[in-house]
Length: 222
Image (cartoon, rainbow, N blue to C red; front, side):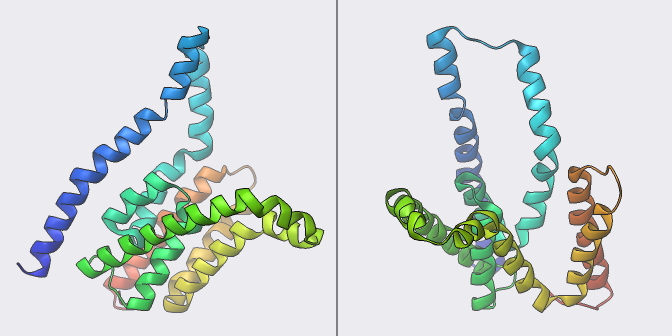
């Protein structure tokens, strides 16, 4: 079996396991709500449910399309299933997978990249679980003795620092694309009244389009 055949088999198995697992996780997420509504007979009106869903869709709907596409190069197929199942995608799974691919010099879309990103994400899940459990046990005690400016930095700027580091990692390798990846959202944010969802969609797909154009013209290489 050559690498292409092995990659096809890998993806086929990933789909067979990942799709039903994620669908089952999404379905079981409704069980607590169904139990409460059944137990206390507090079923909300359909209009309330649809209004709540519309509010969530307006806030996060753009990410439903942008995240799977923009993260796929780092996560791979199996990593995408794992990441959306485990959560903390942008601030945990993507940085871990990207760094693992960079260290092992793996090319996205290959069998090696699939295996490397999957192992990195699995490792991040276990590390995240240990870290979260430890934070719950001793986190409050540690924060109570730290200076307030450190606490503020950890709570306010931690996510920004992670995303900035991830952006910097890719910017070093593809500086031509990084310029547009940073300039597009900055320019769009200057447009009064432009929704955040529109900024996200235009930034993600606009950067992807520019990267594709640069790749076909030979300006950048994979």
